[in-house]
Every structure is written in C-alpha cells, then in structure tokens.
Image (cartoon, rainbow, N blue to C red; front, side):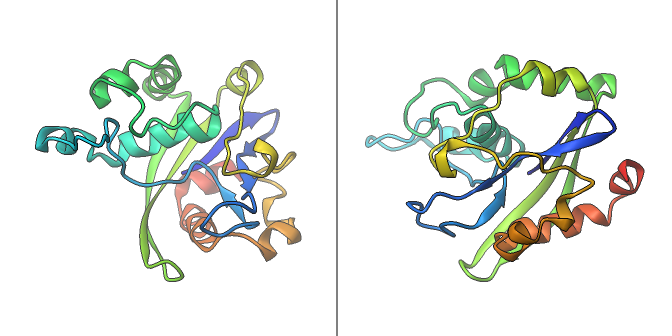
Length: 192
C-alpha cells in the first residue's frame, strides 16, 4: 500500500530500503507497508476453517501490515489471540484511519493488481492518502526488521519521488508498478 501523509503543501511517502538480511529483494527500496495473507492465530495446532475465512481479507491484511511496518508493532502472526475484527478493527490506530475516511480527511483506494515476475507473486495494490496534517505531526512512525536500521527513507515526498534516482535505480518492481497504477488515478491528478 502506498501511504501519503499530508505535510504542508506536499505529502510524505513511506518508503524503506530493505535490510540486507531479508530473503526477498535485499537492499532494494520498497514502498511500505507490503505483505501477504497470514493467519493471526497461526500455531502448531493449525487453524480452523472459520479462522482462515476470517483472515482472508485484503483490507485486514494490508492494515495488519500497516501496524507492523508503519508503526513498528510486533509481527501478529502466531503471537496474538482473538479474531481479526477484535485485533484490527478495535485498534486505536486503525479506528483513527476509519474515522478520517468517514469524515473525508483520508482516501483509500484499490489501485489494481501487479504481478511480480521475479518471485511469481501477485500483489494487490492500494493507496492511503491522509489529508490531515496532524496525523503526520502527532504520530511516531517506526520501521520494522525488514527495513535497514528500522528507518524510513527521509524527505521522500510526492513532489520529489520521481526525481530520486538512487531509489528508482533499486526500487522493488511491485512498488514501481503500484506507483504507476497510482499515477493513473484521479486522486493523483488532484494531489499534483
């Protein structure tokens, strides 16, 4: 998911350089959050069919990754109990986004699907644009172990992203494809 946070007359973009110790695309730059479907209560005892159905939601998956990769929360997989709706929909960070969406202070769009041919992985792409400047000002964003030094690349904005040659030279393919999908939207044209 492409995350854009209002900051003055521009929008910050959450992007990382992947750690050298990750299995997929080490050292590449990546728009975050990014991830896949995982069952919250994945344990050695296995999962019931209703747990699998409860977890099979693109929205839930992307916002689980949002908490892990934007706010640095511990990986949820196999470490929490409760249903997806208990864990995510009642989370204060997710409720804040939901409130902003209802008030028109944020936009959330499905951009489309991209196929990562390197790893034969289909990825659903989304964008979350938060228009409320206070969100960026009042939150502490923490990377996770997938990012180099658990940090975001600083000063990457909507206005300068495409001029960042170092990033574009090593940008993970699905992130580049997601950006191109975003550029085709009316929302992008409005923000530019």
